[in-house]
Length: 297
Image 1 (cartoon, rainbow, N blue to C red):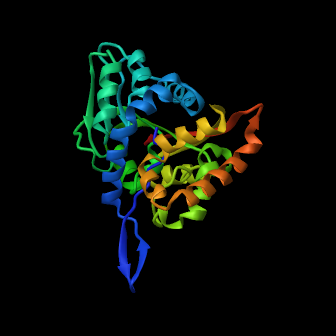
Image 2: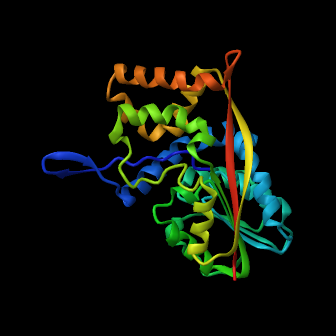
C-alpha cells in the first residue's frame, strides 16, 4: 500500500518560486520515505489486515490463483498480497515481487517461506523482466506511478494471452476521510506542499476513471468493484501522531518549518474535520477501496 508520497521541487519563474513536479525527484523521495516507514507501516497496518488492508482478501479472491500460476506482484511493498499469493501456489508456481523500497522488500522476504519466490528492487515504470506471467497484482500502487500508462503497458507486455491484472486503489476523498481530514487543512495553510501534477492517493478513486485507465492501456473486460471498510485509529491525538509519522512522513519537516502557529492551525482544523467520525473519544473512519480487473486479450 502506498498511503501518501509528496514531492517537493521548485523552479525560478519571474523571480517567484513555483512548485514544479519532477517525476525523478518524486521517485527518489518516495523511495527514501518508504525505506524509513516500511517497518511501522507493515507491523501497525498491513500485517494486521485492518482497515483498507481487508482488501487483500478481495484481491486474492478475484485473482483466482491456481497452484501452477506464475504471478508478479507490482509495488509489493512489505509483501502482504505476496504472502497470500504464496499460500495458494504449488511447487510449480512462481511468485515475483517488485518494489522501489529495499527495506520493504526485506520485510517481504522475511515473511514469505514459499521456495519459488523472489523480491526485486525495481521501478514499475521500467520493468526489467523477460518473462510471461499468468497474473499481475498491484495493491495501492497504481495511483502513485507518475506515468501510469507506461506501467500498465509494460504489465500488459509481460502477461500471457488472457492473463489477468488485478489492482486495488483507494476511493475518493469523501469516501476515505483518513487522508482528507488532515490533508485538506495542510493544503489550505501550505498550498505549495504538493506541486501541480503530483500523483495523489485519490487519483483513481472514481470507478469510471480507473476502468478508463485500464482500457486505455489495452486491457479488455475491465471491471471495477467497490468495497467499503472501516478503520479505527483511536483518539484524535493517536490518529494525528499516526498520520504525521507514516502518511505525512515525507512532508513533515516541510510542514514543521512553517512554525508552531501554522501546525496548530492545521491540527485544530483537522480536529474539527474529524469530529463527525468521533464517538466517545474514538474515531471510526469509513474507507472505500476499488478493486479492478482487466484481461490481456
